[in-house]
Each structure stands twice: as C-alpha cells, then as structure tokens.
Length: 134
Picture 1 (cartoon, one colour):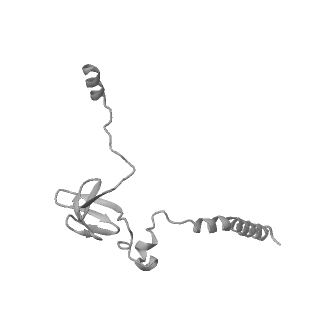
Picture 2 (picture 1 turned 45 degrees about the vertical axis):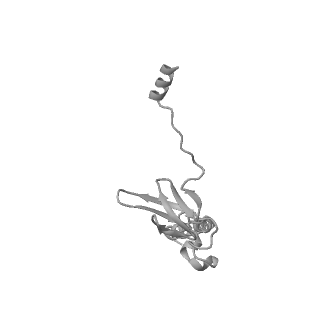
Picture 3 (picture 1 turned 135 degrees about the horizontal axis):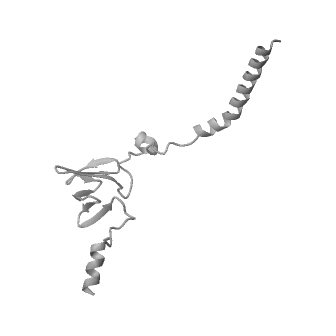
C-alpha cells in the first residue's frame, strides 16, 4: 500500500479510538440533571396527584414583586395580591420580604428568606457616634 493510504488508515483508527474513549464521558454528562429545570409538580400538575398550588399544608412563598403601582407575590405557584385567598387564608399585606396571611383571627407571616435576619451593619459613622457618646 502507498504511504498516504496507510496514514489515512492510521488516522481513522486514531479517531475511532479517541471517540471510543470519549463515549463514557459523554454518556455521564447526559445523565446530569438540569439545575434550572422546575420541579415536576410545576411542569405536570398531575404528577403528584394534586396541583402545585393546592395540597400542601403550609403555603410556600416563592417570589415577591413590589413596584410603585402594584404588590404581588407567588405563593405555591399562584400569583396573588392583597385581598386574594391562599387556601383558607386571605392575603393581608405584601412587603419586600414577607407576606401576611390571615385565617380567621390567626395571622401567619411567610418570609421570602426565612433563615436570614436583617441586622444593622456597623458603619464608620455609627462607630464614630458610639465612640463620642461613650
């Protein structure tokens, strides 16, 4: 055989072995879940036997939109405003980080970030004032 033909056969063999070596890597990459994909209950409401907005004991605050002209919140996949109902509760107030629900005489506060508490941060001005007053 001529040298160019041998070179071509070797090149094809190298390409085939490189592809065979990459196949397990490609197969593993396809099995990774998409972190931005919504939960199945939001894609197929009947997947759990109930809709995303119904059936959960405690309502879940997912998002809040506050602008000059409106205040809206997403609770359990449902967009609500002040006066709307969430299960048996009524939306009383929507603030930047929480929603107040009332069921009869009972009041429940849903926080957007329940594990985060606001605190005042010590600034240079506050430290200077504290030093002067001491």
